[in-house]
Image 1: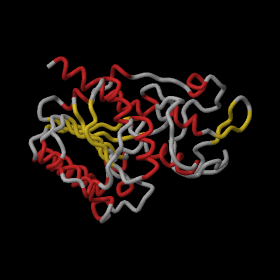
Image 2: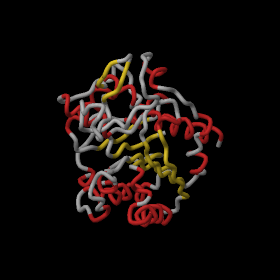
Image 3: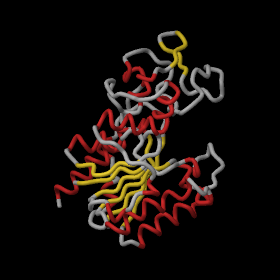
Length: 275
């Protein structure tokens, strides 16, 4: 299977897809530390801005992956959606590859705020555009803590396919698993599930309403480390992040947890092998 990794970040899709030998023929991102991290860990150098990529010059692919910018749809932002002239238009940049190459599978990832943005009209527009290209489409909201990673992190996945049943690709019942923080880290956490890993607000304190990284562990206050956050996003301890400490936290706050991309990978492989 050949795929392109758009808005690739630190490569959650690549991390999971390389385990089954799939071939990344193009990665794209505009964040310098993310591109450096991608190159360091996968020996693939992402090209720059997706706007500047000529889709007709890219070889054919089986899968298009795109965790397109979430800020225009997030509850934490201004929720400008498609009216965000820069980030809000990136879905259409993804679609230029879909229209030209007609890959058999399209995977989009975003925040759960996309579900109710503009009373659901934004999601309807996205699904309608994909369906107009001949795809069957399904979507699902996933939470890390339902699948063995004790983090309260939600992500929305939209899957389209011209060949396979997208509902089958998004059926993760067999992966359901509950693990507490204490079990995950081998230490006594007062909470069972971690807050969502975020880009900022580090060492915010137990009493801070914006706290996400301070916990009572073994009877004392404890701040999550970058290594802890790597594990809670599903990456191994030897995964190498580029940039300053602040930039590394931003990379981790923006990434897709690998548990989601691994489940998708396994479902795709299972369905493809069956057919």
